[in-house]
Length: 78
Image (cartoon, rainbow, N blue to C red; front, top):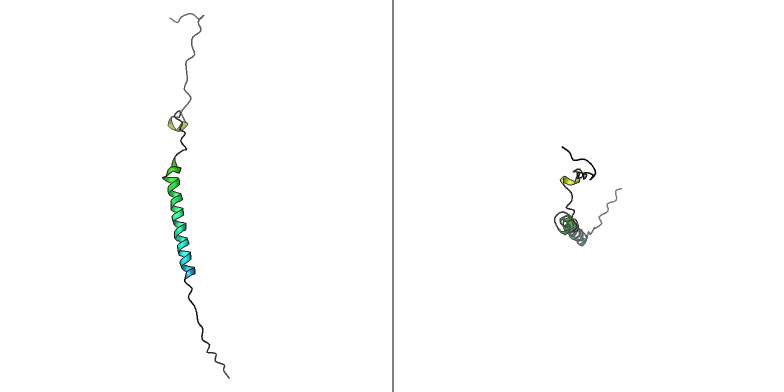
């Protein structure tokens, strides 16, 4: 005694879900590229408008030295 079931199965393809995911993926990639451009190449790459021109060699140079003035009551060197 075998029971054979011959039911018809209907599968509806709802393609709106996969196309919506593709659109969201493309938008996410565009936003990511825009953020990378802004930080690396665009206006976000500047230091904010303030510059420090007092640094030499990346700020690792020793402080400038000055010779102390000779006291006025000392004898002149010969």
